[in-house]
Length: 87
Image (tube, rainbow, N blue to C red; front, side, top):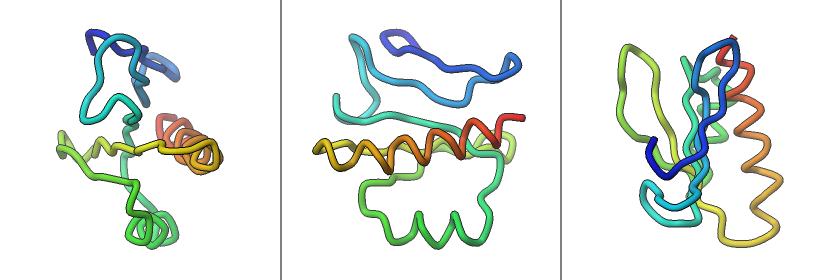
């Protein structure tokens, strides 16, 4: 997480935002979900800004590319989902 600002819930990292370094593009954030619901999986499959990363112990890191101000609403929605998943 060097160069990224990590976000935690109850000692569990659920997201990281770039500060001086990034994973992928400098406009991307990453977040971790334990498992996605059917509705989340459907939404993710339709969103081209969302990428899937590595699967570590059944927890999958995802990236989300932010290209415009309009993308912030969806980025915040995914961060909220990751926050809830980190319980």
